Length: 274
Image (cartoon, rainbow, N blue to C red; front, side, top):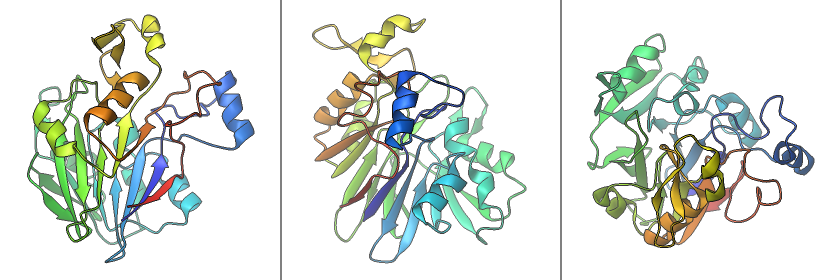
């Protein structure tokens, strides 16, 4: 299984348009980027590919990596930075089986899958399939399991992807606070590679209107506001889940420049074979 991190950034990306902060300037100097989140997984046995989330930076990411259109896709939730690259599949492929949760979102009063169908009903190539949380399904010859996480006010999902022949496993926390349900944690546990959502250091919770949450035994917040983990929280999650390797994603440009590119904070284009 070959895993490529197409986009390691939050909804504005790094560098952010029109921003001259030290972190964005450092990214330009280093010629690195954190575009909007997406992961590309190649099944090396079958040469099929799976795309996790349809970043609005789809075109740029695929051209940069030299990738062709994927064979299947999974959508974790309906926020702009995870879904609205779907329009890029227009004329790129005849059919893209796309899996999305059948769970009804109380905010929209429709399932995630139905929202994707409705917003992209003009795309004949985008064939949306309902996926049931905790029930594995096959996509690109791989076993995929969606699990609910905590990203209010919308429903959101993490996932595990397993090669059924080799047992290689990649897990994604999804956009989430540290308060991931225990049953979901069990599915995500023990991955060879974990991508965990860590948006900013815990010190920056003082700048959020809601502060921080999910404090550890030393009083350090593992959640920033109400939607994402702090970097401290993401590292603790990786330790709790006993991941062999972990990379922090959905990283914002608010991380100070002197710490913005240190381990284990990821950047675009990282590639792993597991």
